[in-house]
Image (cartoon, rainbow, N blue to C red; front, side, top):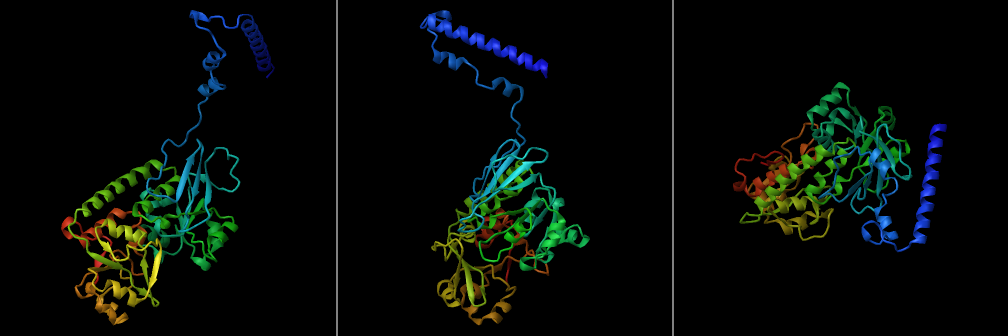
Length: 414
């Protein structure tokens, strides 16, 4: 240490002496020509001087542990900023109409925790154990090749994936319950690096209670995206926690290209059949608004959705009579809810027979891939694979455009 102190001291004296000589020379011969006859101004000297710390930066370049980065192209509900050894992730729309936003500080394992983020939830990455409190995250985790990190889900009855259900049966994945019946003690015992959850902004939500218990809860707002590609792009959000940006970018680029190809194909159709969706529940018919995810899918598939003229991005709650008035002559009825057959629909309400789509046997439901307990792959992997959903819809509306395609999520209701 004394040796280095002496060197720095001598160096400092030399610099001071050189500076004094330079200043004296400038005072005595101000405006004199420099080498080559060009007047040497203070401005020129400043431009020629190397920036402070340049030598140090050359010897020790900044650390960048994230060579591949995520830049959302369709998703509008999250953002990420990279800082060499950590990422700052913001969920700006955790649910439709949200005024709250959430910040997450993702710090590479073994590196210092940066200061300046007092309100951010810190997560060490890459994560090694996760709990998914929605089945929609399972497909994305699987697509990234990280299913081995999954340690907990809500209930296996809601899951279609055979791999996940088998892991539940073998005890590798725990069932933590849902809503007010969530086993918080079990969640804590699992010691997850992160708990992916859903927020809605309503009273009595689960996620604040989990945060109060010290659990690392991260809100995934994919379901609030109004477009199919926007929703699917949240695979990049999940990838941030695994440092798998490169894989997510490649996966999404492939599916987006296929989706846009199919969308362009459907745009060439000579006709646009009319369509309505869903079925009444407890006296009310929930119809997606014209700015919704479902409306976008139907439009991209070359159909004329009968409620496309509404401004809502959420659900419209209508009476059966109101739906009959507008959709009696519609060409197709899709997503028929719990109705697996025409007989079940008529037993629920004989007025369904008034629909042209019912009379002409043009009812389709997204139940081709489901388990006896109720797990439905349309809701599990469909959001992550909108190109497959779109292909199904084009096959239904314009079968001649995709003659070789076999329905994957949908089947006709007979």
